[in-house]
Length: 436
Image (tube, rainbow, N blue to C red; front, side, top):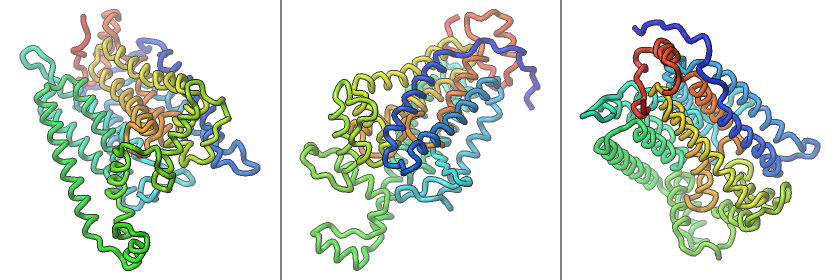
């Protein structure tokens, strides 16, 4: 049983103005652009309804950030396993009796609020991996490494999360694995263990895709499907097959890798990406001005999955690149903190949270500009979505807690000793990347 340690009376450092400054910039962009991108949801007599609802979640998120910032990061050692279990249970509940969003069970209702636990699960897996890796640091021939137990437990977390997210979209699964592999590299895992883990992921992923494809191919077409296909001179597919995610993925991938898509007519299948490209082309370098977007009224999900296209249209490519740099700056700030923290646990927490936010932003932007196939991925803090905002604010709160309470290499010896006494003995490992 862990010893009971006293918490330091005062935080080691003040409020991290770099993280708060980045949050405030993104907050301003979020309020302005979401108001512009929500024209499809505006009703007569309720013009400000969408932005008011969005503002409520942002207000709740700020309170969550302030609350977590005031809590010593050692408390997170006990909270993370609970967060991981609760996130997975919510995902299981969604698979059993969830609400369908875009044809797939993705959410459940909490009163009048729709909760999408996938956003919590991505953060939970990152924090869970950090929790595991901080306890499984070893030395081999004088070099930092992760024990096989840490590799196995981290892989089980990733595979469990991937299985729960698999039916919701391939992008979520790839995002989760990208976060996990990045965390393992940061944790100092040897390249041999890394490539073995990567190989296992690839084999299991191909097996899962094969099983999914085989299951969908066993569904016979109905008579109505057959007649419609003959009339339209299309391949015969059953209704169940058309609704199957494997068919959706295959259609999106084949459309994505076509060389000449500019001459395609806009239809229900390519409407999102084509209108997104039109919006970005119209914006050019400097944009058409705030509130002057034309495509926001035509582009499906302009306020969530494709809000970056509206940003480019209104503010231009230069401003959009600046917003991208804000996310990269947040990751850079996490990297800087990771270099100076004495505690390896705090290092994993701050880098894991930054990776979740930054990689999700990069995936969103890559999808909108056409580098990745079409898929749904919100832009952190900017896209509409209460669950996404809350999950992002939890991640930022964890980063702020680590920045405020974790001792650093240049701190006085009594501050470093105070941190060591406050930490559970299982996570009191020193950061091997700190140069003394």
